[in-house]
Amino acid sequence: MFIPKNENYLNPNFAYLCTMLSKKTKYGLKALTYLAQKKDRNPVPIGEIAQQNNISQKFLESILLTLRRTGVLASKKGKGGGYYLLKEPANIQMTDVIRVLEGPIAMVPCVSLNFYEKCDDCPDEVACSVHKLMLQVRDSALEIYRSNTLADLI
Amino acid sequence: MFIPKNENYLNPNFAYLCTMLSKKTKYGLKALTYLAQKKDRNPVPIGEIAQQNNISQKFLESILLTLRRTGVLASKKGKGGGYYLLKEPANIQMTDVIRVLEGPIAMVPCVSLNFYEKCDDCPDEVACSVHKLMLQVRDSALEIYRSNTLADLI
DNA sequence: GTAATCCCTACTAATTATATAGGGTAATAA
DNA sequence: TTATTACCCTATATAATTAGTAGGGATTAC
Image (spheres, rainbow over the protein chains, first blue to last red):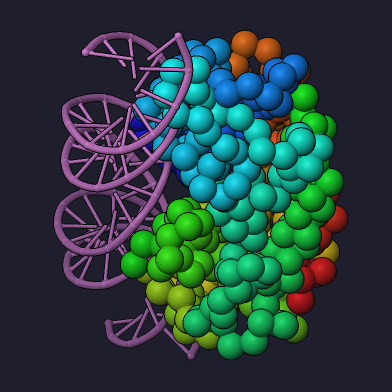
């Protein structure tokens, strides 16, 4: 099922269709938390993570793969295999997790640290109200993501 | 052209496709700023606003209509008509504008003030790491939107 | 060898955002 | 009265997305 990002505020049927955080990020974060909560760092099979967190196993597979490729997780194949954390939870910042799963933290390219791009419709960035506002929003979000590690969320 | 919300971080073609702020909100904010910058409060025709800000006139039409229905703008028909601000820029909070154009400020329904909804996959909200993180993100964003009025962005 | 497990590619469905085009009605100023 | 402008509706289109599903290949423990 696709969950739309946005919906008309005045629509009488409007409840909360707008889930701006993707399931990908949500599930990824839940999986990481699950691994962090284990007392040991033995490999945990995807099936267990998926089942315990109500996540489609196949979907979770691709998410964990992404996290492995970016160095947050490691995996072991074969019987007794699974995924395990590469770093201590206290050393895993949310900036890394969010950037990998959700994408840039900035809501517009012109205020992005890692993926800056000029708006082609905007002649003067400094005078732009959108730029001015979204810069503040980015900074405050960044502050939150930076100050939270996986250990803080358990 | 459709600008996608998200894109794989590892994709070598990845530049900045992720514009989480919709054009609707962006254009709406720009239009409001344009009106606020005028010295008088005379009606300004859509055509002028669209042209001066590089916005498709038809698209802007629907955006301004939304803002009128929610009481941010008023309009006058006929010759010499157009849109004008109903309140002083200093009295127009960004929370109102963002909620109307973009939707809920929270990134997940379970941390939304105005559109709360329980996650059906999550047995314990208090123990949920996603909830914990996104609550902080919502609070910080809300703080920014509340403390910025249209007057602050000029 | 067999079972468990990760790895990878391809595919799908429903839906979205961002418009464009066109037409008709209503109100207003000159 | 005429020109201008907002208001409001329908229909269409494109490219891309999210949230998966399906199936098979590779690796490892026992």
